[in-house]
Image (cartoon, rainbow, N blue to C red; front, top):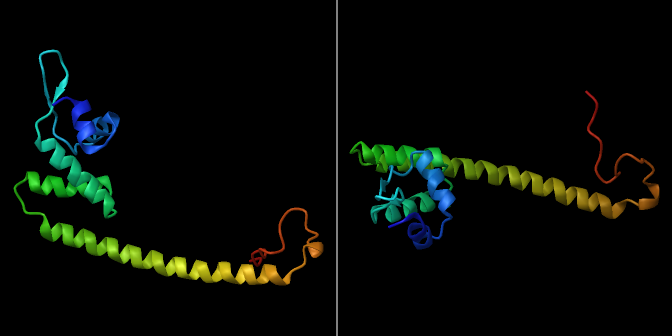
Length: 135
């Protein structure tokens, strides 16, 4: 298959496929006599895996580490589980940070309901958002 056919099959831009090749996520394809890339059908499965990995939040480096293990003949299940556990911890930390930010935003909205725009005399900022305390 040529790159356009692969791209259409997995709904990716051909440039993305070339980028994945440069990053080492895809093996170097064979070339046909006219120099065009000639892919076998296994590249579709690999691209689907890359997209699925990105879908769960893996970076291309993390995906490459999984593919490298598999390429070395190692079953990557434990590694994937560790990556997923780390990703989950990161998500939960971010959720906590977002909850705090949400409370701060609710406080600012409440503050804005109590302030009169006429009292906003500072031409450089808005009195709804308080200035940080000087240190």
